[in-house]
Length: 245
Image (cartoon, rainbow, N blue to C red; front, top):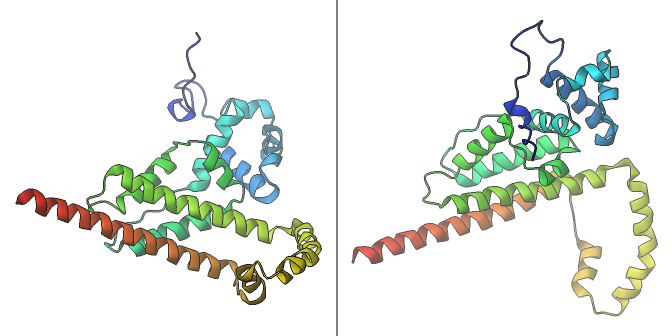
């Protein structure tokens, strides 16, 4: 069986001998991210990146031999790293984490599906994971409980941003046409009286803009998390008191 190729972060970027490289992984990734942000991930190719850089595609394969290598450095660079020190207020800390993650995903609309489908372990992602888990440190949580909270927040933000991006997509005209087409059908259903809550939603719900919806959902999420953390802490205190008797 052939030896498995090492991941991109374990390979030297330049040879110990010979001239300095003309490009770098970071520069190639930056150009690729710019293309993906503007035109979508499907527009990214070594040929297209090479055109932007004014070189040949084969030259760039020396830095990132496989497309998966390119995606790996793109994701890590797009995620980036911003420090965040715990304040002791877990709700405020998790809110800051969620808002930062939302900004990143909105800045790079192609990023959320990649994070969901690829266990990327680049330097920025790892530093960010350490930073975020540290927000829950010192609270007596098992590492699994810390991961549950961390993953819950990130997964919720991913879904919220995906919905926001869909709503703001210029191709949403088709969705509006679909909603208009559904109107008579919904009217018929509501007339039966079998859907009182759905009727209230359609007639009276105020959905607000994307920022308002995000903050409202985040507040509900964090209230649940804080209640759960308090319950865990209470369980730990009770267990400690019981064992000391």
